[in-house]
Image: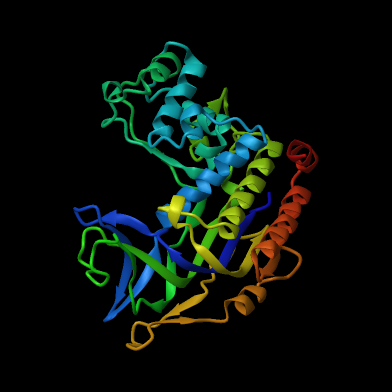
Length: 354
């Protein structure tokens, strides 16, 4: 069994953007994410918003490859996890309710049915979910989801982890767009909205070998034997692995976030390194170094590409560096071929892609 894993260490130069305008102060003034280290304030883009964009990319790629998602997952519904499990329970047991007796079998079925639930993970707490709270989803739930009764909470960890994007330089000035009839430097105006410009460092890691596996396989049996850990075919696993790799690469090549309809970023830098391993968790190497004792420059650049390259051995670990978006996409495709070539389902997955 190959323990496929991949990590991306990257830097993005983003000018005059509002990708991180994710919060509010009680008025209509959107506030960007900030990180204070001593008396220095740095700019940040949360991992949550990066993660959301990767999931959107993944859902779009699934549609283009005809990889079916459960309806609530295709729409990235906040409750896609519990609703997906209930839909799976309905397929397994018809009108039988979801209980602790069929919970893990239903979770396994949901993972097999839906690539997005598989790679993105979920938390189903049940006790706070009432069907009467759903309005637009009501018809779908009545027709496609089993009722649930006394079900214990269940979760699946995400197959990929995302770090915040952190600016390399402190935020020395605030760039604002404001209403024409407001004073230019009246930054407290509720009509002023904040823009940012900086170079950001980020890291993303995906445990590709976990894709398609059932976290609760050991609690289930098929007759007198435990069920297999892998809930899908090896061909399907390989296809999902390649699709997640593409979704991450597409985000870095074309970053997006909040307020992009009219405030899309001016991307002036895309560079980084990709580490793929078939034998271990891919190392997590950041482009920045944090020294809390350095009062003047607590965040500094580091020679991260050289560090990444030191892990390559061309046997179990491969490293690709890139200096622009085009190189990123090319190198990512080269690593995808490693996945296709290293899996038993390579031919079938390649045919599905084509």
